[in-house]
Length: 440
Image (cartoon, rainbow, N blue to C red):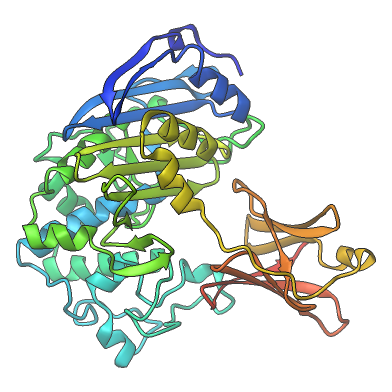
């Protein structure tokens, strides 16, 4: 990729974290962009509760320079912004954190039962709703409870959408109007929205790319979704994060709830209200963070509430997560420990041996829904799960049909009437979440 001449700048930030950081961007960031084939990288930094830096590097699409006005889609970094709006509504007394949501919205796939009566904003924001991530990736295509709300963790965009619809019915106002009145307008933000703003210049759109610099088919979202699709500049998103570090205009008790572990994800990692939470690092600092992951969109925000510092990073390519991890670990003293906790996985023990000549029976491309696929591949006599835009993971055999990736993900192969493995089921935390049918 051609690195534009305007990239050759000196990036100097003093006393961020516990060390002086003087960093020649000309030598480092373009190298990472080239290594991982990431056209654009946006970096926002908060120091002492204030935005101290916001800059965009590279190209929106090949040949089109990016700048501070470039509009990124940030994938699941939408969720903390939605959560902030919800917590403001709760702080104002228009909704209770623990009141049942079925009074304000009833999805046509559900009926009023014990589970539905337990569903509330607390369980939704901390991913304890009992819903899978998206119903259209299940075989039935219907919304259903997989466990009692509040009883375990399972990441769910459906839960956020359920809460959005309940709030709309309760307040009589849609999310865009609520966000504008409670958050964006008071902060003076003009370049952040849950859907595309027709007054914006389409020439400012940042396009997602694969690892070969090829653009994904993309258009900024016009369909409202509380869990994904937020469009923003790096500066406006970083300003919201600064606002959050300074209390987010909510009550102290509610702010503490936001940062308090509500459910355990794995060792030392929890979910609060809208955020992943590390309660305490080795230096006594606490962490709230979130990542975003779609095809060609890899984003990350990390905030340290005690010291009121943080970083926001947007990228527009499949390997962008490798770049944002390098940036965070280079700038932030706590960065390596944060990613060590976030990335730590239980390594399962192999309990079943599959002969090399049978591995080909498992490999192939499997489709969850139109244009959403994953691959099962063989490498060095072992199977691996390959999801586009993500790091491949080894499958550890537990039986002929069941494999583990880690404590979160289980993979089950299902034979058809001809005894061929043409269906693969993915389980998250023992909940059947996705089903793929062989297409190749």
